Amino acid sequence: MSIYKSYAPLYDGSGQIRFALLMGQYLREVLVRHPVGGRRALDVACGTGTLALLLADEGWDVLGVDLSAPMLDQARHKAATIITAGHTAFAQGDMRHLAENPALPHASFDLATCTYDSLNYLLTPDDLLACFGGVAQALAPGGLFVGDMNTRHFLEFDWGTCEVQEHTGYVQVGQSRFDPADATSTLVLTGFVGDDERGYERFDEIHVERAYDQATVEALLHQSGLVVEGAYDSFTFQPHGERTQRIVWVARKPLAQL
Image (tube, rainbow, N blue to C red; front, side, top):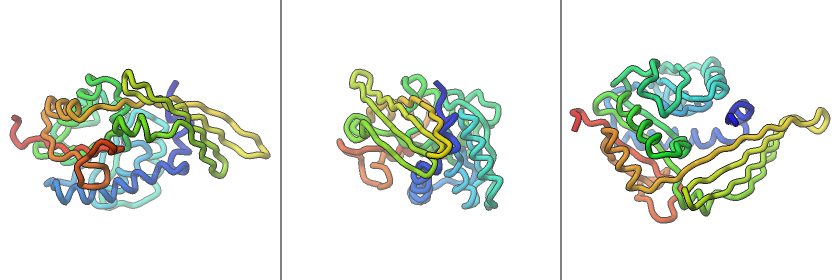
């Protein structure tokens, strides 16, 4: 079952845009602590392009990459309606195969981001390593990677088992189940689009996220050639703890390969 096909036009209006707005503000603070030299950015799993456009508004030239064509359609539509100081472009691609994507020139980006737990959708260590390796290849020497991941604590204990959202013209029901055997959480998202007069059209999506422990993520980043500079309790610069819901990883490509 494909995801984000029917949900893409509803994504921002359902409240998901809030995370990108928060991440845009937090990222500015991250870059003060972990500066980079240039203004070329790669946004992996860019979704509807909000973070990419926020960066462009601050003068970055940004390439957003996402697997979902409907989400990219939303991103391109938004980009066409605003003027930004920097340039934005969007390309389709799987974050597991960034290294083979012809839209990504090697060693060309000063910053790479992958946010809103997109990395949790990679369900094997090999897939996660492939993504990190593609990011490392795309970054220029000295370039920085910033990515966040939901923790096992969040997926197991804090992600509610049932949530209902009501918006004008749209009702969303989310039901999730955590499997401790493989540390995955499966969310069944059911949406109803329409109104009481015309009726509603239903769509269903299944989203699966996997949690990884800190040692595994750090080892995979190192194996890909990136050096970890920080692992923060999300939206702070505090160390993460047992009840942390989301970890923001900050890693850099060395000026000279180690």
